[in-house]
Structures are given as C-alpha cells and as structure tokens.
Image: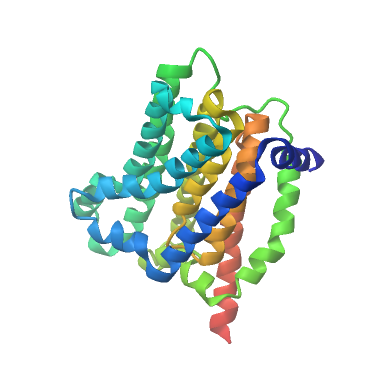
Length: 312
C-alpha cells in the first residue's frame, strides 16, 4: 500500500502541473454537468443508433475527452511536436476507432434474434454483447502490439513478475462500506445489480444463468482494464510517458455516461489511480482485481439493497 501511495505522490509532486490538472478537472466537470443535466451524449449518439452516422458520432464523442486532454497536455507542457509524429497520431486515431467499434458493432444481435427464442433473447443479447465487446478491446490492441511493438515490449500490462497483489485486496476491503452506502441509494438500485434483469428472462435456471452472466460481466471489465490501463497507458509511454494518464482517465469518464452520477465522478479518480499504478508497475493485475472486485461487490451490495428495500 505504501508503494502505491508513493507512486501517486510522485505523480502529483514531480509530474503533473497543478494548472494543467485543474484545467482538465474543470473540463471534465463541465462535461459531466452538461451530460447529467441535458443528456447531451444520449441525444447526440444514442438516438442515432440506426443511422450510418452512428459510428462517427460515437467517435467524435470519445475524441472530446481524449484528444481534448492531449491538446491541453501539449499546451501546458509545450509538446506540440508529438502531433507531427505520424505514429502518435495513428495511435490516437486507432485507439478511438477501437472503442468506437466496441460500442457500435451489432452483427451478433441479428444472429441472436434469428436463432434464439424470443423469451431468451434479452439474456443472450447481454451475454453476447459483453463477450463480443470484450474481445474487440483485446484483439484490436493485440494487432497493434503484434505489428508495431512485439519486438520491443511484452503485451501491454500482462506482466506478473515482482507485482504484489495484497494491497489491492486490502483496498477492496476498505471499499466495502462505500458500496454498502451506495446500495441504499435509489438511483444506484435502479441500475444494479445487473444480473437482476437477466434472471427475469431466465427463470428456469437462475443460478447457472446468473453465474454465466456474472462471468461474462467480469470478462468485459477485464478487457476494459486491459484497454484503458494496459493498451492506452503503455502504448503511449514512448510518446508522452506519464502524460497519457490524465487523458486516459477523462476518456474513461465518458464511457460511464448514463450510469449513476456518483459512479461517473468516481471513475475519474479511479481511472487516474489505476493508470498511475499501471504505468509504474507495467502491470494491469492490480487494476483487474479492483475493477472486477468492485463490479462484483456492487452486484452483491445492490442485490442485498434491493432485497432489503423491497422487503420494507
């Protein structure tokens, strides 16, 4: 735990410029304020799912935090030269294409609707979405690594040597009271547990159906961790070092739009912390433990919360 604290202290003391950090936080706060008051992202992107422009709308939505914060970094650190590096620009664009593809790909939905009985379609659509989306976040970064960096570095974040996992499990214990508090909030219980909606459509095998859902749910979180803390943080190391951590964190905030406000706000600081740790350790295992651990804690906490709330 002390080592992790040292990583964070070093980042804020030696790496980050206060005005840059404050500006980026203000930018994030304005975006969150606009989204949660006017549902801007929903109108701009989600209402156009059936249109050809859907991919480009989603691409531009995620470009706002990622490219926007990278431009802030360039301005505050006087590093405009990175934008003249074709490999850097290609990596920025490819990163956005990966996540946009993850959000807009729908071919598997038609397969499910064609071959699965209507009563079971909702369940299998959720399972297939999580598996397909997770695979996209894994396979496409692996292609970049194979073509560009295979000879220079191991696969982003899959480094286990000299990594201590104990602090992350301890940190999870500290989060239990916070999850318990969240599990008493109505807006939280409207969204979680995710498995509750699944069991409505698969009543005959609730345990097996719930377990499969939670495993695919965890897989999606694992791949998100690999993409954000593995691929984004470690692929950009040779271009801007620790400078990519904050842009990654703001990008991470935007993928939480539509979730409870508290979760979206906490994603900024969680993404920042996990990004710092991934950069210093070159490993995503700690983040995986926290990410999946928190997700499953929220499922358990919300399940208990719904039970207690509905029973009163």
